[in-house]
Image (cartoon, rainbow, N blue to C red; front, side, top):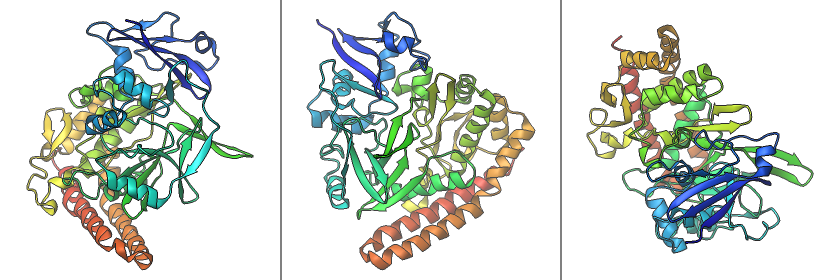
Length: 442
């Protein structure tokens, strides 16, 4: 059987060749990349070397790395169906959707025509609204100018958001933002407002996160700046250069299926040790852990941590995909599960549910991370003692913004009312509960 081949690039630089033969994958760095002054390994599992890195029967670092670039769950199934590709054929999916993916790499067949001139195409609210209404029958990318693959389980679209307008990139033009509509599952309503609020709250509390935005087309959409992009201004206008980023599964050299099962405090400590400034990474990871507990983020798995990779080493990237999933287990949404039956994404030491987390557990987890008690107590207090008042201030800003929007778009009334109820539940049901729990038991 002849091998299938894809060429991997970062912007204009040829990084290497990806091949698949009889179900086994291999990757070989190009001579140009190996001799480049700014060279770096794509991940620790794919070290810089002139020889091909080949998968075996049980250990498959190459396939696991590149498979992690693809969407998961129903989103992968939908993209495969739209391209008429077997959902299990990851290599064909990368061939079809590799022109714009998570991180810096672009993938294309060796005989692919040179990319067209970099152009931005306007994406009107009406056109985007039509695509959202077609979900889940058709992916958001069906009518996109460029075929693209973004990791994760939600519907996403890679865009550029500038001057209060949306654009789709084509040719060599890199996207600068990720767009997500409300979650299609009825069990997770108002996810756009939820994620926007929690991310804004994280920024206000000092966590390092990208800028986020909301837009109504009239369906709500969430926009987040890509941390794996660097803006460059030129006489022709702004362009975005790709910056290499990998998620924790890629950094650890594991398959995406382990994103929950392999999560643990020990894994966080291992990830911190792999960074060029372990002490900085440890403190940021503790902040991330505490914030997810306080906001009821029960989906904080390993693929929701990313790292920037370059010649100087590895560093923790900005945080993303943070929202209060736990609120959907509460009475505000007709459930009785919060917090007694709401499970953590992975155990924090011996705790598996939010109701089992208290101050003592967080301090013990910090010790396992390598952070002393006084530092951990200070980090915890900085969030716990400020989060309620900060959240209430942010909610007032949301409420004032909603009033302004209703003056020009009264049809948004039901949507904004539902979002308001969701955010009040996040504050008064989830955050208040966890503030009390993290104040007790030393």
